[in-house]
Amino acid sequence: MTDLAPETEATPKPRKRSCLRILVKLFLWLLVLLFLALAGAGFFTYLMYDYVVSDGTPGALVRVEIPEGATGKVVGSILAEKGLVDHEVFFRFAIRLDKKPGTIKHGVYELPKGLSPTQLLHLLYEGPNVTISEYKITVPEGLSLKQTSELFGDPEGFIKAASNPELIASLGIKANTLEGFLMPNTYFFDVEPAPEVMVARMLEEFRKQYAVLQSEFPEAASRDLMEVVTVASLVEEETKIDEERATVAAVVYNRLRKKMPLDMDSTLQYALEKYGQRLLDSDKEVDSPYNTYKYPGLPPGPIAGPGLASLRAALNPAQVNYLYFVSNADGKSHTFSATLEEHNKAVARFRKEIAAQRRQLREESGNAKQTTAP
Image (cartoon, rainbow, N blue to C red; front, side, top):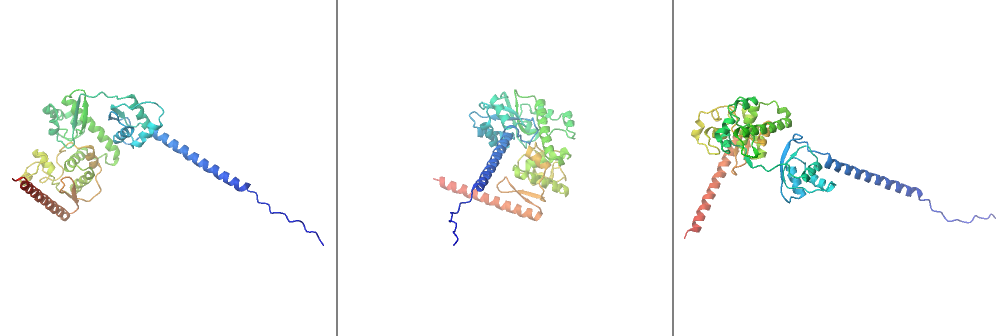
């Protein structure tokens, strides 16, 4: 009989290989996390120290007023509104990450475009670089040259300065005045400027703003300057809603292409100096080149000083086929139409809504009288 070998217990398989795999995976994950952390840190460093807003001309000065006690968020919002940073959060990150001690000082600054959030922060640490001017004048959008002149102490001198042939010739236009080419804005001076100084400053501001728009829309840079500014002035007078400006400009260009009269009250109001007033049917018979009910094409020149939004719309009109628009009952917005049939319906709807509003006002007035009667 053969002896059997004694049974032995099964020995467990080694786990070294599985443990090694886990360690390798853990190490790789740590490397990934480290890479992401470094990339994130690098990205934020870029945002804080190197990233600049691309809009506008680098070095162009922007006037900024920082109120007393403003938080980092408020200051960031002001800078974002002025186009110096893309978002206020970038400026707040700059405050948190910057190691240079300092306090943002309130006051008026002129800050150059093309700086990083951190560079802007350091300028605000240094304090205001603008002495508060004694004279401040705001020229609103949509005023005629005559209306603008009345904002100053010497209206006649202002109009005379705006009729300077050399300044007009410098624009390469044929006109008797700089109507439409004096940029609406808020201007600061140490003392009230002479009319010649004010006109030159406003014209220079127009040149700067228009150059920015030409770089924004290079395909429109060769457009006739007088035509663009004239269309922009019509846009300025016909709507005050920014979202409608490009559409109004499109209507003007569409009607011009189809040789349709513009039929715009604003041009006739300019000719008659009835700014913002309701026109009579007899007014539409006035013999004036600014009467676009009677004469085809654009008026001879701008009818007001257009703002930046209207100039942008004239250079970049909406791609629509509208030929008509009419006010809505709210007195602000408009309904646009591509056909006369659609337009007539919109006009009828407008008149119906206005009539309903008037009835409601009469009823409310009558009820008020009854309530107060003894």
